[in-house]
Length: 158
Image 1 (cartoon, rainbow, N blue to C red):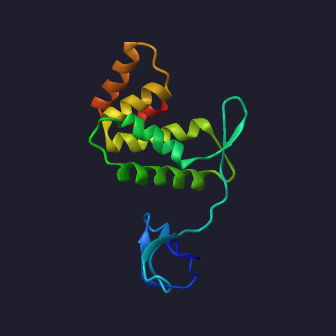
Image 2 (image 1 turned 90 degrees about the vertical axis):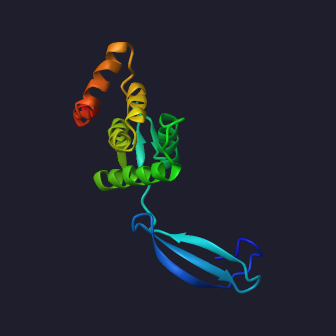
């Protein structure tokens, strides 16, 4: 590995600790060439997971797409991005545990909804309105009623 500042190949590890819920190792390094410090993350290489869309097309799973949809649902809500990143990691981990190579696109939404329900109920309702393609006010009333009753788990499966 090369130093990101000077390109020198030799550095020493100053500190190592678990990161990302134990899924990676964070290493603090110091370059032997320029003396500057930087952080690296080491994690196991995972097989690629493909999302099978409704029309049958396949697309590589993107944690960034999941994160951006969650960020959009949480827009102007008191939710920090790190909380959403951790939720995305849990969604991705659950998908890798359940599926080997391909995951149907309709399996991702319920996992995101489960995470958002814990994080922020307004974001949960926003995401659900897009995911379930709400068309009337009654659709909103039903999901809000289920959230108020604490039965959001059943609402996810609709």
